[in-house]
Image (cartoon, rainbow, N blue to C red):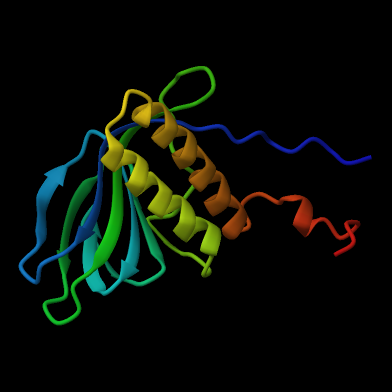
Length: 165
């Protein structure tokens, strides 16, 4: 009999979203943030400084700055970044403040599902319909679940050796 795994549940309140094509002059000024920042680098190169530690970033990197962090960033002048960035408040299933289980930089394996979910969020956010916030939140939760699977932090049925492929 399989043992119980720890349930993962994160409820975001997205307060800002952007699919940005950085200009060579783009910067984020140093500031203490009162939200969680989750950024996916689609292409290009840049540098994020989180809590005074410099992190070079490139395609496939996911950046996570927790609420309360000091954050600043720049992009390469010759290879500006293209990114998806989410600023959010984050709660657990009891609606208490929560933190995602990610390091500051996570290198994601290429994953068409993550790409699709990011693009779907961009489309929903652009619609600005009555249910866009609810739909965007639902797809974002699916995105976090997929990242947890992609990084091996949780296992899905496809990682169970008893399942025939």
